[in-house]
Amino acid sequence: MIVMKFGGSSVVRAEQIRNMGDIVRAALNRKPALVLSAMGDTTDYLLESAEAALKRGFVSIEKIEDLHLGVISELDLGAALQREIKTLFWELGSLLTGISLTRELTGRTRDCLVSFGERLSVRIAAAYLRSQGIKALAIDAWDAGFLSDSAFGQAELKPESPVRISASLLTIIAEGTLPVITGFIAKDGNGNITTLGRGGSDLSATVIAAACKAEEVQIWKDVDGILTADPRLVAHARPVERVTYDEAAELAYFGAQVLHPRAMQPCIKTGTPVLVKNSYNPAAPGTRIEALPGANEAKIRAVTSKKNITLVDIVSTRMLGQSGFLARVFADFARNGISIDMIATSEVSVSLTLDAGSDLGPIRRELSEYAGVEVKTEKAIVTIIGDVRRSSEILHDAFGICRDLGIQVQMVSQGASKVNISFIVNDAEADRVVVELHRFFFGEEGKPGPGGTGKMPKRGKR
Image (cartoon, rainbow, N blue to C red):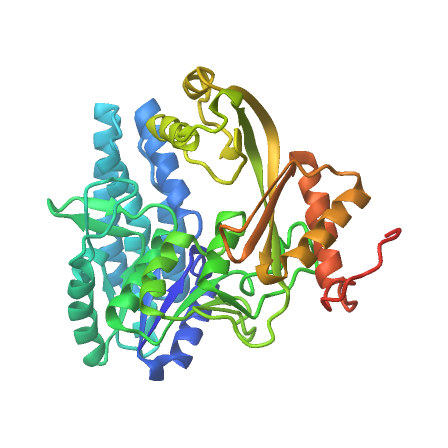
């Protein structure tokens, strides 16, 4: 058995759904279970509709109807499906009418609202697959065993969910039926619809794979896998053939938008491989994510960046030789609900990074009682993912590039993670650093980079 998850761009129009059908048909001998996201911009349309109902008392689902009914018509899926879909539209319209009358949008109502995207998507996809002679069944996640807590917007699955999921889906698959399951959503113990938060659809797929002991999870997106850099910045970025779970998690956290670290946790526990593939280019090998690196892996896997970062420097000579300085700093941040990204410390100082947007007024006042505090905004984290056993080489090369660019590195973090070296530069400098690092380690199209062989290059004009 395998699990195949298709993102919104892979089911956005009739053409993409046909393409998805071809990919699924080729894998039928591996007994797949499908997990689908909402079609294209459906979730955005749902939220726009809620905003109009909430603020203006105006109820319209025209964009949502046009998208889904248009696809049904183009795929020639018949009147029966249209009736089923229109029932969902009626429920959606009633929900929006309630929002317009009460002028209130709670977390519970919002989760119910956005669930319609996935619920519509799986019904259309399953109907299309049936029209192609594949025995397919649309399943809402709660009917497949997804039971969550009531943390609307970021629900966590209950420990009993995997047992419920395997019992439900393995029975369906054993009967020769292809389950097509909604990603991203579940129900709590009171029967309320919940959503699983960031990476929720990918998480749905990996939970199913872990629960059912699948041989592999395939995440089908609109890119050829995990790339060596952001292709919007580096045109010749290329797919990475293989990464470990740790490397993929670090890449995702520090800027790569392929697979959220949270979604990989079920597969990490069971050792289930994850294959990231391109539904627009299924012949491409994609990126394989697994527990251990392959033999003869490259020194560097990828270079990424995370912008709009705040750097906080905390210095207290009064704490010299005293225990508890770091404990006090971290306790202050925890009490204020502020999450820390990177950290570097000495005996009397600590530098750390935060996502911009946090209210630093209260924490700054608390820290100022025992330390000097300097806050620097408009910073960026540049991250190199690779073999940290060769960190001296990598740091020599990276800092040499920054020196040649006239860029000052303001903080370094390396050691806590065994796959990641990160450093801070100004926001406006990050793109240049990433481009030059990529050119050095990976080269340009058709030309190897001077740092790609692992040999120590001579420094000079670039």
